[in-house]
Image (cartoon, rainbow, N blue to C red; front, top):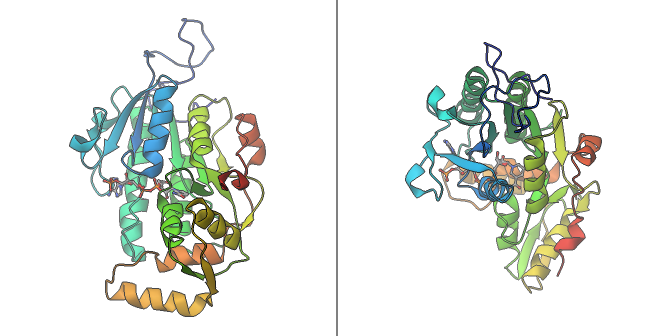
Amino acid sequence: MNSGAGAPDGHSRDPAAPTDGSDTGRPHADHREPRCVGITGASGYLGSRIGERFERAGWRVIPLVRRPGSAVAPARHYDLTEAVDPALFDSIDVLVHAAYDLTARRPDEVWRTNVDGSRRLLDAARRAGVGRIIVLSSMSAYDGTRQVYGRAKLAIETAALAAGGYVVRPGLVWGDRPGGMAGTLDRLCRHRVVPLVAGHAGQFLVCDVDLSEAVVALATTDLAPQVIGVAGPEAVRFRTVLETFARRQGVRCRFLPVPWRPLHWALRAAEAVGAPLPVRADSLLGLVHPAPDVPGPDALARLGIRPRPFSAAAP
Ligand SMILES: NC(=O)c1ccc[n+]([C@@H]2O[C@H](COP(=O)([O-])OP(=O)(O)OC[C@H]3O[C@@H](n4cnc5c(N)ncnc54)[C@H](OP(=O)(O)O)[C@@H]3O)[C@@H](O)[C@H]2O)c1
């Protein structure tokens, strides 16, 4: 049970506390129904899917977003670049941190916005006594990663664990209406000719439905806080991923193998002059050097989550 995220006075709000008044020995002084989850990044691809899944499970969802006026549910203002008001966590039992600013490119900018911003949020949540913290990291966060993104996520993971939180490392997330990297690849595969880098590199993938299910399960699990990879156990060749995305759209595209280094340099040069690009140079590194394995498969099984295989994405 996660009691590590308790307030300094020892009163943490325990999302797994029973509602019948029985005593588990865990603090649950101010438990209410329905249980309440605050989600940063709730306007994004995964934050919105996770919010919908929590709502279906009977939770009250409070989006913590930069533009609260545009959110469907009553939302609160939250920006990674700003100081955190402890009132942000009022009545929140579980915090899911999914916000990440991918428009930050330079390492110092990535660090200032995403790492320092996440540290501020997680520390404030711990101090406010939020009973459970769940942070979306990435499979790019593995020891030895070359990506700035992966290194930033590793630093955020350290802050999450220090706050008594759970870390979720999703694989490449696919779904019926994919966003993020899968959304970019999906759009790429609408073209007849598609440049292919690292076609043999093995990618771990997860359907957005299974990922959302795993995050909701973590909100009440008895597992100790830890890093949990959420992806199918079998790596899928990158070429197969693209072929599947193309087939789903009824497109027969030709793949043009491209050496990744010149493409990486070209992307970096274009980024240096501020050209808008469909793929970041740093993301390309993630495709070329994917994670070697999925961490914590036993924990995922104990959550009752068996990610569907990527072959289920094929039409
Ligand atoms: N999609 C994947 O395949 C995948 C895989 C592994 C891990 N992840 C991780 O999962 C999380 C969500 O990814 P996603 O694919 O859903 O990305 P996304 O669609 O780009 O969503 C990112 C969210 O972060 C918010 N955000 C950006 N800058 C912010 C700031 N300065 N302050 C507060 N919020 C800010 C955005 O809010 P606005 O609407 O205001 O811009 C948006 O809601 C990220 O942490 C990502 O690293 C994603």
